[in-house]
Each structure stands twice: as structure tokens, then as C-alpha cells.
Length: 158
Image (cartoon, rainbow, N blue to C red; front, top):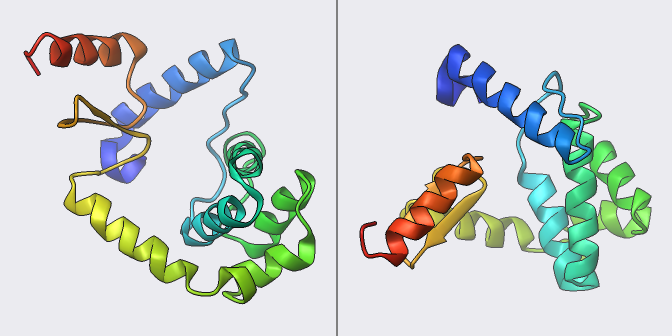
């Protein structure tokens, strides 16, 4: 966040996230390590393919908690395995997927191709929303600002 936004904007964004998160029962912390998310994407992609979207959602929520509340490094294989096991996946199968074996075979390539495709479509951050098929909103924007963009697009002004 700091690299993309600078210190003042980062502090403001983190303050806003903490305030909004607290209202939703999320205790944001920003002291953890931020490594590559590639293996987390492998885990999420393979979970959806093998176990369905409900389980993928559980894994996603747990990874969010590990990253932003527990300050864990979700680029670490052992952290990913702990998070997945905590929501009901088997340790052996998760390690296999993350090693690119079994159901995890070829997933890194699929994810990299998808990444190239979305970057070509203009995606620069997460979350990312496309409103009206053409207006892109990147990042955790204020709900009011997001709503205004939806109205603008709906009224043909966006």
C-alpha cells in the first residue's frame, strides 16, 4: 500500500479501513509481511475447482483473517496450509496443490494467464469492480464514492 499511495494516503486509507472494519467486527492490523500472493491464488483456484465455491469462500475469508487480523505471512506455504486446514481442507491435499502436483498441476500457469488478461483489461488493484461494462473502480473506495459512480454510469455520465 505504501509503495502505491505514499505515507500520507496509506495512513488515511488504513485509518478508514480500521474504522469501517471495526463496525463490521474486523480488527485490521497492518504490521504483517506482504509477500507474493501467487500461492494463495493457487490455493483459492484449486479449492474452487475441487471443493466448490462455498469452501473457496471459507478459505478466502480465513486468508483475509490471517493477513489482516493475525498479521500472518500468506505467502508462506505453512501459513496457507494452517488456514486451509482450519476451515476443513486436508493438509496433504493442500500441500500437494501448492507444490503443483495432483489437482494443483498447471494452476500457476492458469493464474498467470488470467493475471495478464485482467491487466490488459485495465485492472490495477483489488478489489476491482467493473460498472456498466466499462467503468473500472480499483481499491477499497468509500461506499458513497462507489455509489456515486454507479449512479453516474446508470445515468450515462460515466
